[in-house]
Every structure is written in structure tokens, then in C-alpha cells.
Image (tube, rainbow, N blue to C red; front, side):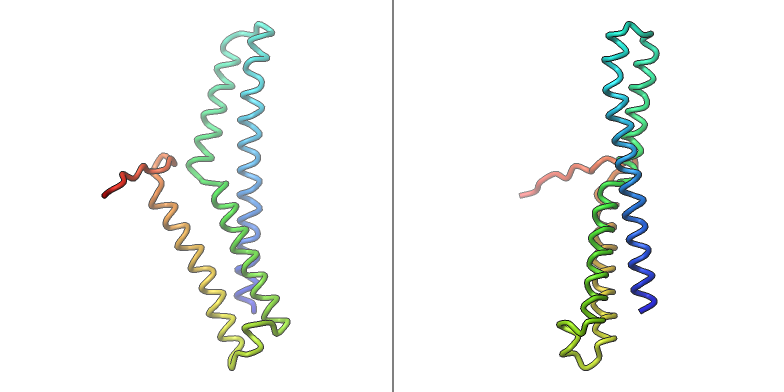
Length: 141
């Protein structure tokens, strides 16, 4: 049970940190974008608007590079799936009550969940260019 609890803690913490990073970067981009026309209307120096434009590019670039949104969603799903398996095991739920070796069944099912998430992460990395943008795949016939 220590292993599954450790996995739940790790995925839960990672999901939370990626959610904060994603929302923080998006908020920074939105606020910066909203300030540009306000500064122009107030006749501020064009340099201020240029700086805000740069902030937007940097913020969006970091988000694309680190894939905070995708990681947040994937790790939250994995953490919740692991919590569900732990609850089913502790409560003698299906499929554990019918299993000859419930601990082995728990191990197999939780490792499958983690392997699925790892496979998803690998696919995301393979489908992303070094600058964080999605690769365009040509359709073949």
C-alpha cells in the first residue's frame, strides 16, 4: 500500500503544480493582452505595449514548452484512478472480493494505470517539437 500511496501523492502534487503553472501563465497572458489597448488609449509609450507583448510571447512559449495543461489533466486523471483502485481494494470491492490474491490484483491494476499514463506522456513527447509546438502529421492514404 505504501507504493500506491506514494504514487497517488506524486500524481496529486504534480497535477496541482501543473494546474497552478498553467493558470498562472494564462492569467499573465490575459492580463498583459488586456493592458495593451488600455496603454494605447492612455497614450503610453509604445515601449510599454511592446514589453507586454513580449511577456505574452514568453508566457505562452513556456506553457507550450512545458505542456502544463496536458500534464495537469493527465496527472489528475491518474491520481483519481489510483485513489479509486485503493478505495475498491480497502472496501473489498469488485474485482478484489472475488480475487484469490487481492494484493496481486491491486498491484497489476495500479501498475497498468501508471503504465497507461506513461505511454500517454511518451506519445505527447513524441508528438511535440523541441520548441513545444505540436508536430503536423501528414495523412497517408
